[in-house]
Length: 271
Image (cartoon, rainbow, N blue to C red; front, side, top):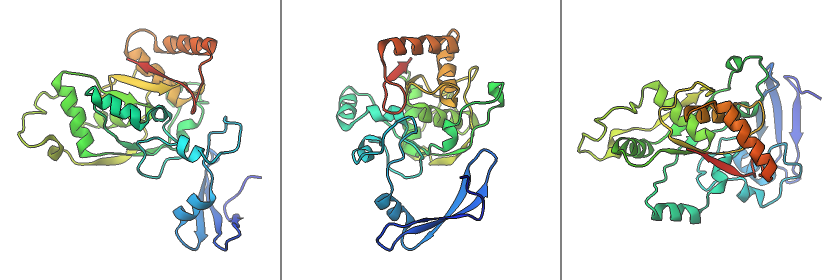
């Protein structure tokens, strides 16, 4: 049954430290604002009693190893509703191999929200609206990206649509000038010239988007009619040709070859 504002749900854990969830508001899209009431720290109780929220297309209960497997090695801060799945292909061994080949790695935070996975149901893709998501990019990461961009050597490779969305959000705000040639003119250490940027993004990247910060993209295979698929098609199109047709052809090949789709699936590189 749908829970309406004012309804409550009790979570009894048998140890006397359960919580009560009170439905505060209900939106037209089906989301609910919930207030949890109980004793002790909620995050600790949730970690102790909850299970990993695997995507609904994984047709099995969560297993203990999912707490490790459905998490990236980059993760540091709680807040996302799902793992950024392209990052699941990386482990510490691979990161050491990349660094040994002088391939730098810089991290950022984007808290993936439920809106990312809502299907596009509008007749025109332009009419679809994304829910905002929180992002945070440290000064050190900004400095490394700018230094690489203006050195003329190498490329900025986004690991996942979340990274691409975060970088493109900041590039479009004007907080970075990704085309400026004087980024390295100061003698001060690069990381001292940047401060952490944090905010919320509603950027919906779709075909026709002009990419300013990302040169290549590592991404999994996404669900049909999703904003993630629209972003991937946009990036493929930015590399030349019809991006949607290119992605459709790639997905057809993936199906024929038996590639695995979605969260625990395979990835591709668009460069």
